[in-house]
Length: 369
Ligand SMILES: NC(=O)c1ccc[n+]([C@@H]2O[C@H](COP(=O)([O-])OP(=O)(O)OC[C@H]3O[C@@H](n4cnc5c(N)ncnc54)[C@H](O)[C@@H]3O)[C@@H](O)[C@H]2O)c1
Image 1 (cartoon, rainbow, N blue to C red):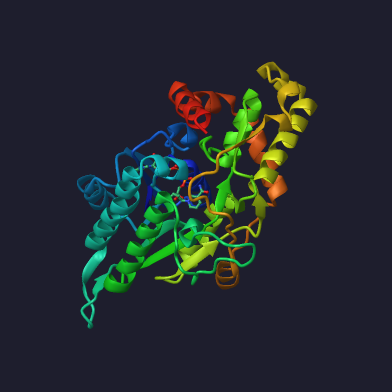
Image 2: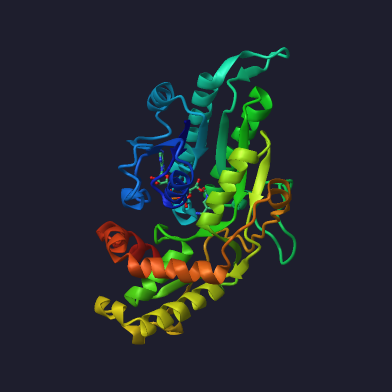
């Protein structure tokens, strides 16, 4: 049996990863450590909560006592650190929690892993570790900052994050690198592009637009909407992490991306067209009282651009594809169609997420723009 500590496993990517791993490996035990912020949702894990290979622990990666206790109890082989404050807009409003969770939390996990995994010292005085251990940091392409109209981020592109969110993730990324260099800790770092798919909290572009479309609310688009992102289906991100975890060379960084650059405004229009088409062709959805007539491009509302908004991200994924043989399996068209179906078919999940606090927070945020 392999023992994994997955942090932030009640969030969007972490919960998809837990489903993916428990389905693929029946000899892996997963402990999910998650504090359940507004973005953490145990409903994402329905179906695995009674799996004997799964344990949920409510708590913070910044709690060194708890993290140490879990290491002693579970003797982890791998740590996969998803836990983070993850929304750029919130980091502009209140950076402090991003520094605490994303940077200090990562350092606490690294220290616990080092302490628990170290067996002694090698001949050069570096720490030596038990066999087969790995610390995995889920970083982001936002660490590289913004591109002009051409070029792509490679793993050696200078790190130049622009938002408090990306700066905190970059700091964590560099601390993980430092533990690899200074303490020879077995680590991998992935820097992935924008993910989409099921269980994503509706504050990020794609689920926010789907939800607002369904509710007939305006679709807030920052600036001219021509910001470009590379998009990857979350299950392809999970398979990339699986590849790097098992085949990645210790100490290496791998970019993960889908070769799929899209302007934000084109995604918003695609969502409007697809939601309209699905609602008009599926009479089973009519009992949800959707107002088909209101779902059109007039819902688009251009709002004041985000401060420091990065213009373009594009990922060169040559290293992971050639060295590890990973490649994405979803086309954007299929992935988006399935994602929209998922939101249409999971109304209970959506209604629980779109609660009073959510509506107050986002109505206030977008009405001020
Ligand atoms: N979403 C993307 O497109 C994307 C792309 C690249 C990298 N990433 C990275 O992947 C990771 C997961 O992203 P996501 O979109 O699933 O985020 P998310 O916001 O959906 O989930 C984050 C999870 O972390 C938990 N968490 C927050 N603070 C915690 C703490 N102190 N202790 C324990 N748990 C805590 C939250 O409760 C939540 O369940 C993040 O590190 C993010 O930076 C995300």
